[in-house]
Each structure stands twice: as structure tokens, then as C-alpha cells.
Image (cartoon, rainbow, N blue to C red; front, side, top):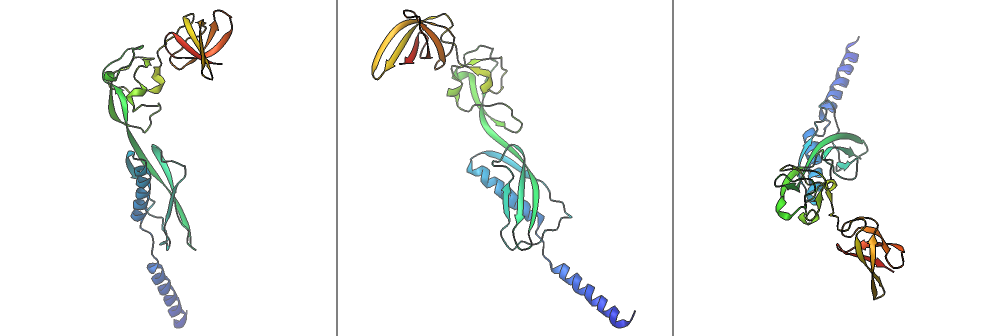
Length: 233
């Protein structure tokens, strides 16, 4: 190999090495910070208490410095408890894209029982208190407004500190099947009342079937109280 060719090879690789050295890459930590800021802003806008942890990016992955703003979006519509996938991309002439995972823990204020309550218990305000709960992995609907639980009946026993679940609540039965009731019928300011019999049971605002005692006609109405069902003519 002659000296000139050897010199050419040396210069070529020297230039290539210098060029490679001058190529700038995005800091993985900066990308993670941007992802954290993006998720935080989404959750802060919804006023949700939360903690976040961003997955590490493979250190072997080299992403060229983006001359534009790096774009970040979720692969689903809303931030959810648990794992969320972020789509992070640079839309420059030399584009790149990377997906990273964020572990999201959400917290909320929810109603719990102050003390053990038996099945069939009619809940009152002093039975309840608000506590901060972790939503991650929660598989039941919870309540934060005491008015949505008060005067409802427990379907099963709960222990002190147990979550007051929507699925464990039912409205108290105001009218039982066979009860004698008053049917109030309204139409354009005109109102009449008649005696009737409940054919099904229910609580306040439930729709039940009733029979007019005089005409024997079966109609549907809305329970107003323990003695009254309203119908619209």
C-alpha cells in the first residue's frame, strides 16, 4: 500500500470521526423531563392529585438533536391510572420516534365507613368520612359526595375504613308489592287522585306498575313517597 493511499485512508476516517463526534444527540434525561412536564400539565388541568414515574430510555438509543419542538402525545385519549404509553417524536427532515412508558398513580377523596356497618343499614352522614384513596387498580365506582350515599341501604356489611361503593348501595324500598297506594295523575295543570295497588316494589323515583282499584287498568308511575305514585296522562 503506497503512502498516499494510506494518508487518504487516515484523513477519511479522521474526518468521519470528527463529524461523528460533532453530531449532537438529544439528552435522554431532557426527553424524560419533557414527558414528565407533559403528563403533569394534563393532570394539573384536571386538578387530580398524582405521582408519576417515567421509564428509562435504552442508553444505546441515539436520537439526533431535534431542530424543532419535540412533540409528545398519549397513545390513548386520557391519562389513566397505571401504565400509560407516550409517543415522543421529532418531525424534522431527519425524523425519529420513540415510545416510552409512564407509571401514573392517581389519588382522590372518597367516602369510607367510620365504623362497621351491617347489611341493610340505612346510611346517615355520621356513618361516613372522606379519605384519600389510590385509584390505581380500583375496580369499583366510589363516591365523594355524602349526599349520594345518605339514605341509601347497604347491600352487604362493610368494615371500618371500607370504601362506600356505588355497587353496594340501593335505595330504600318505599313501596312493596301489594301495598295500597294513591295514584296521582297530572295533565296540563289538571290533577286527579285515585286508589290503587302496587304490582311491583321500588324506592323513591323508581318506575313501578300499579293497578287502578276502580278501573282495574294497569299503568306505570313514579314513586313519590311511601304512599304516592305519580303518573302522567
